[in-house]
Image (cartoon, rainbow, N blue to C red; front, side, top):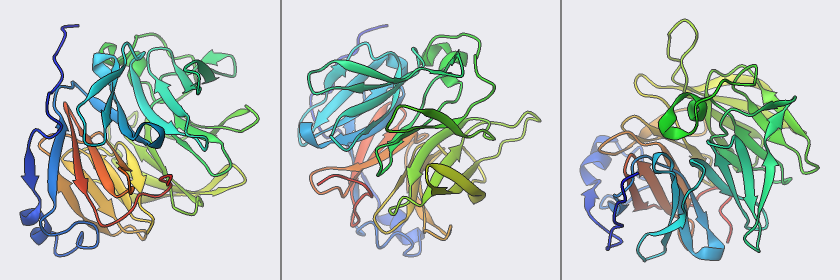
Length: 317
C-alpha cells in the first residue's frame, strides 16, 4: 500500500452542531450542549473502525481496516501507529483487566494482547471450521467475550483475505470465561455492532446485511440476556436508509449507532432522539476520554470527537 503521512495536529477542523441541535427539537439536549463542536482528530485513514478508549494508555485506539493498521491517539496528542500490520483488525474492546481484545478479519481470530505484549488467541474455530471474520466484540460483567462474525473480511479483499466460509452462517458468539465458545444467535444475515444495556440485561445487535431475497433489514435488534443465553429477540429500531454499524450505550441507557449519515441516538424505549451528522458514513463510535464523556466517531477516513453531557456505559474509571 502507498504510505501516507500522519497528521501533525490533533485537531484538524471543527463542525458546529448548534444548527443540528435546534432541528432536533431538544431531543439531544440532555446529551449535547447547544454550542457543542465536533473536532477532527485524524483524517488520514481509509476506513476507520473499532474505536476503544484504553485507560492504561490514556489514548484512543482504533483500526484503519482497509489500510491494515491500528492507530493510537493520546489524549491531547497526535496520532501514532499502534500496530502495522494489524491483520485487517476491526473491532476492539478491553476486558476487566484493561487488556486489549481485537477482532482480526484476515486471520478470522479474536485475540488479546497481554501485559507483556504477547498475543493470546481467544477464538479461531467453531465446530471444526474457521470463523469468518470477527467484526465487533464486547466484554460482559462476568468476563465473557461476545463477538459477531459476518463475512466481510472473506468476501471483500480490501478488508481481509477472500476465502470460502467454513461456517453455516454469520453468528453472534459468546466465549465463556472457561474458554467454551457458543453460537448464541444464528438468525442474523450479517451481525455487526454489539452493545449491552447498562445493567447487562439486554444485548443490542446491529443487522448490517441483506436478506437472501435482496431486501435490506436495516434493523437493530434487542435480546434479553440471562445466564449467557439470549431470548425474546425483537426489533428495537428500524432505519429508513443506510445500515446500522457500531453500537454503544450511555449510563442512562440510550443507544447510539453509527449509520449512513452520522450517529443516531435512541432512548431506552426505542424513541429516536436525533442524529449527530457526519460528512459521510459513520462506521463506529466509542465513549472515552479521562471522564468517559467524550464521544469518538469513526467516519470513513476520519476520527472525530465531541464532548457530551453523558457518560458511556461500562467505561472504566
